[in-house]
Amino acid sequence: MIYFCVVLTLLSGCTDNLSAIKEINRFDQSPIGITENLYLIYSDSAFVEAILEAEKNIDFTNQKFPYSEFPEGLEVTLFDRKGNQTHVHADYGIYYPKTEIIDLQGNVIISDSTGVQLNTHQLYWDAGQEWLFTEKNFTFTSEDYDIKATQLDANRSFTKLVTGVLRGTVQVQEDQL
Image (cartoon, rainbow, N blue to C red; front, side, top):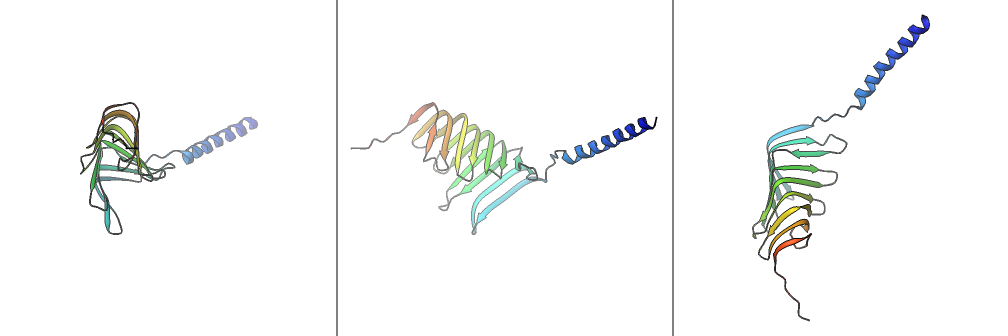
């Protein structure tokens, strides 16, 4: 009988420790903050480089792999030193600060004052490298291009542009030898 009581006590003690360990190791997906009607101006040396607008931002930068989510979409205006603007629209966005990757999804539109426009369903932006890429169908129009294709790798100014299978019109200038 004493042996049975000792075993029962040990087993009940293990259960309490197990629940305590589970609580310590529980993955907490609570955000560090939620912002509504976000209007953020990013500047460097008194020069405005970007304006970000979003209905809602959920900040999960308190996680092991931090991210910041824009579940209701976002609008970004980028400015260069010459005063040119680039506009970015997406129905959904998520930013991973450790990798500097931005994942834009749903009705992604990038346009600038020169008439360049890119439309796709999903686009990744590597902010550190200033590089765009997607494996989804996209359209790209400019003064020299009218492209429909899958797979895009491009720099921010679209002067380096690599695609998968493409359909459309591309103006090519031949060099004289």
